[in-house]
Length: 211
Image 1 (cartoon, rainbow, N blue to C red):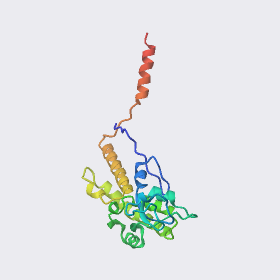
Image 2: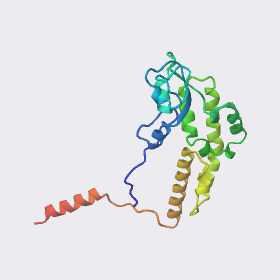
Image 3: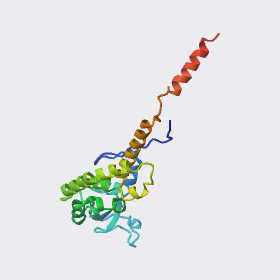
Image 4: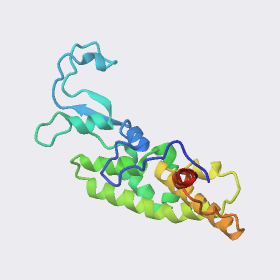
């Protein structure tokens, strides 16, 4: 039986995050186009394109997702966040026409995760973004799973290179299920064995009974 020294922690679902998930940690560092809505005193050194001591109001810059979420407030305008181009109306039209033709890894690579996180920001386009992300997933899901089931013992690098990280995880799950089924069909399925703790306990018990 194969053992893993590290058990991957799955990412959060939807707008929720799992801070023990490496995927969610990487997602939180995705950069978003932002605009400051007030002056940030003595933080000018963070903006390399300016020699000012402060970050002035109206400065356009890119912020990691975790920082943008921390600074964004609906009541007190500190920063405003612009939509990444892949979630704007032009790209939504492309996804609605045929989502399977888009290279999501090149556009993302966390298209679904980042799209869900964008709903934290108060945008009038949020309903359209949510619908586009959902329909894109539905439109690409069957093709992703069909590819994973029809690529047994083959080089799959060409199949997964255009997939978002969520789709890659689904592809690996499909491949794992296919491999397990093939092994079962050939009688190579893993046999159930007793836990090492149980075996060690039995050995101790036999030793205690011996004179």
